[in-house]
Length: 466
Ligand SMILES: NC(=O)c1ccc[n+]([C@@H]2O[C@H](COP(=O)([O-])OP(=O)(O)OC[C@H]3O[C@@H](n4cnc5c(N)ncnc54)[C@H](O)[C@@H]3O)[C@@H](O)[C@H]2O)c1
Image (tube, rainbow, N blue to C red; front, top):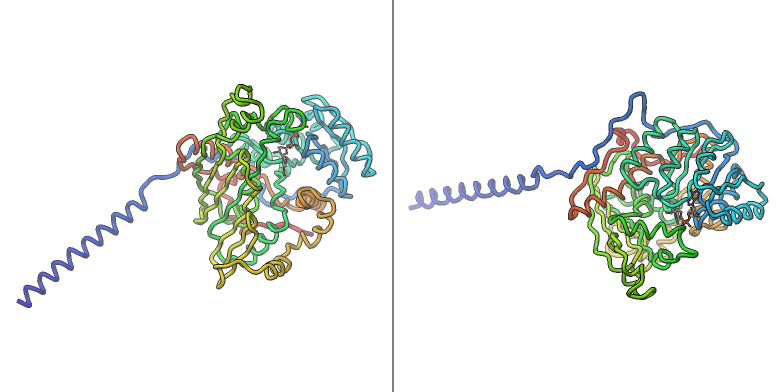
């Protein structure tokens, strides 16, 4: 009897082991199904005789001679901020609206700076790029001109700083990378949000290991812009931003949210963004707003806006981290770039509620007093150096000035810039990649490696000082 029971038990044991093994095998199999993200935009081979421009250094420039192209809402601020930096001279100002050039000239005068040469024709930026007495072309036009001007300027031997986003398509992103590598000129996208005070402190914390291994991070551009989008008189020139909302659906403005967390995660300095999935809600906000403001039968209410109100993108990195990026400019909601960093040892978030929590008390945020002292302990050295002046000069509370200060500082001292052309290409590439994913029900899409294999050469993000 005992023997029979033993045999039965043994048989049961064998069946159980078999079942478990089969189960394990099937779960292993399904975990490793050969479904891979779709390589819609393959990484382009590097043209012959070209090398990467990671940590590019150019000859130091004593006084950086700047041309500012596009003098709308953003360009006017740039004229003022750059005028505070002694190592800068603004030599050319361009806008197709003559009164904008005049306004910028007035700013120079008020700042005690010499008058610049003014330009007002649509293609004058080409003349400007060809001038021999300009070091830096600083682009603040609407999106469509960013890449064409940047490429032309580098081809004509100029360094370039471009407002965000630097490129609208993957093809444009490659144009920027290829031209920067060919000409060995700096191409920096003016991602000012990397220089905000909390973002700089959390970068410092991340680099000093306060959050442990960063596992997940979030960023966004959630900013109700409906009033500006529809403002024909004092809003965007030629309604350019509304037009983009008419013709594309995806994350059209990813870089403010992505820039700071990409640096915290050392993207293309040891890790890289591998693939993304992106989903958009339908479009509701613009139509409803237009109906209420202009009437049911108005032209604006009848337009077909492609851009869904809320766009959400999730990115997976080669080292297994995730990032979530949102974009919503058409619903009434408090401003937020989220800026959240979550690691094995701690958590930080800026919006909607600013707080940091650390192991072993991860369940709750630090008290206000402890948060203040932590932020002051980890204040970024660059903010220590220039933060006070930045607060006085202003520009989104000071971050815009820190950005300009750093750009000129690095050019003046022949140092690598804080943001390189690969940052510009990678962060901007989310626009078209998310559009493709959205158009295909959130299909995973591979992110091209704009460094072409060099993403692991550097081990951390570095903001260089002398
Ligand atoms: N980093 C930030 O915080 C931030 C904030 C706002 C805007 N931006 C970016 O700045 C850029 C400009 O935005 P904005 O709000 O100033 O828009 P805007 O419409 O006020 O300014 C664009 C300007 O470009 C000019 N322009 C058009 N065609 C031109 C041409 N051929 N040559 C020269 N000038 C030309 C227009 O006349 C206008 O003055 C955009 O790329 C936007 O995304 C960035």
